Image (cartoon, rainbow, N blue to C red; front, side, top):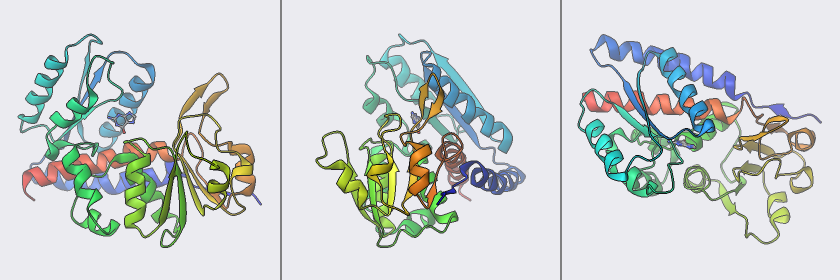
Length: 291
Ligand code: GUN
């Protein structure tokens, strides 16, 4: 059986259409959503991501201010730029593209971004907020900043009516950006969640139990057909640039023969990440305006 393809590009477009209306409504009230992006150095993948984020801003009518900073910028200088953006009432959201060069402490940088402008949802204040929330719908109702990739995955599951209540979900990868936060969001959506990583014993057997597999380990085609059960739903967060092109963390060709639904790479999770960043930026502008 061939899997249903979870079309992230299409869902992202739908949500972006909804968001464009919200931007117009805000502008009618004199509120201009503005996203400030910072890129340190010239990492080619980061340049692509920043370009995609800025293009999305343009499409939705969000102002995007970008600064590319030299790779050898001091941590103190970067912190002072962030401080300036924190104190600029015209800036709704601040995003520092990761990774930053080794000599800069990324934890210190993320801590320095004002929690009210933290559209990535990486500040410990915002992380604490959603970690302590019991229900996913309450997180949305309360207007918490959720990290964009996990938030995008939740929206995909919701819009494709993939049930999470009581579902066995295996998350492969334990990063702060995806693995850990998606675990908390799914837990709040009543899933039973297992996180696996490079040291996990019997990874294959653990994955085989999953109703939903989230692959976010950063290794091309890591999840193979023998690791999943028939009818599994597979969400592939991987973006690996190989000579053959862009591939995910899932062996798509073979896993899609067993899965009931699967996200492609590209066109799955990626467009959703960018879309949820737009949603967070609009929410930030709205909250700061007190409306
Ligand atoms: N690098 C990889 N993913 C992300 C993300 O979601 N936000 C930022 N700022 N950097 C990243």
